[in-house]
Length: 278
Image (cartoon, rainbow, N blue to C red; front, side, top):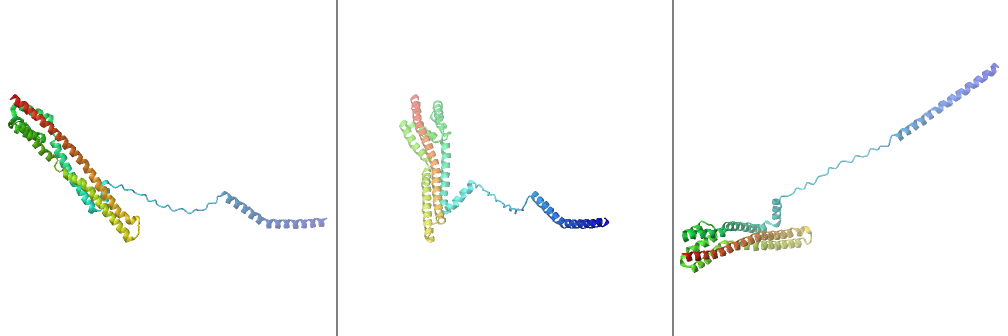
């Protein structure tokens, strides 16, 4: 019996050792599997984040648009059109405007209140006679007063002589008012001619450039055409500006002449009344 228990104990010990050895051999594999499972779980939990290369910020240069002043634009066009031709056009503009301004100032000062002048002359004739009326005319500016003075100065020679002196001196005053208008007309006609002359010269330069390069390209033709167009536009612009002033001056002269004619008739009527009463 003891022998049987001894055999069973030895057999149990052998089986326990075998099981322990098998467990010891299998344990690292299980740990490895568990670790791999844990690693895969962590990998699944943490998203794959690849560091994408940062794009370098490219500095965007802001386009700064500088608005040119009117003076700068005119200066650039003047140079682009060619100083040789543009100078003559500019001279026409300056001289024409100078004459226009002088004429406008002269005609403005020459404008008088004709109705008031006639009333003053009539009152002077009634109170102090011809000499008093002449004094009123001397103290009044303008061609109408000058014509009145000439007519009153010859009132002693008769009405016919008064009418002749008024007509003759009226022509003189009209000539003084129209002084310088011929020069304005010249500049109005000359400015476009200079512009067209610059156009022809510019086109000739463009065709010469084409002939030398033996190629028709915008870069070759642009210079000559630019001179041509700018000079033409400048000449026409000067002519239009001077034409406006010219028409205003002519209208002003016509208005003063009409006042002179009406006032001359009124003066003759006043002298006839005065001589009749005398």
